[in-house]
Image (cartoon, rainbow, N blue to C red):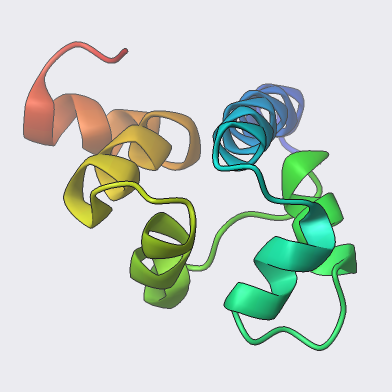
Length: 95
């Protein structure tokens, strides 16, 4: 396993915490969000919030809209956690 793996896991967990806070602010349960995203099971939401998975790029816009957030800002914020070096190159210092 690479040295970056623990850091990657930690960043995904931070992203999950941020996403959970946004979901809570939107007044949605994991089941509610899964339904809005057309997911059969809410467990994927749990996996993302616990840092075991990440929001797929192709569904970021749907997640943003379901959470009542602007898609460009949502994606940009997630890049801080999912692709910190790319975020730095595109936008400068993170967070």
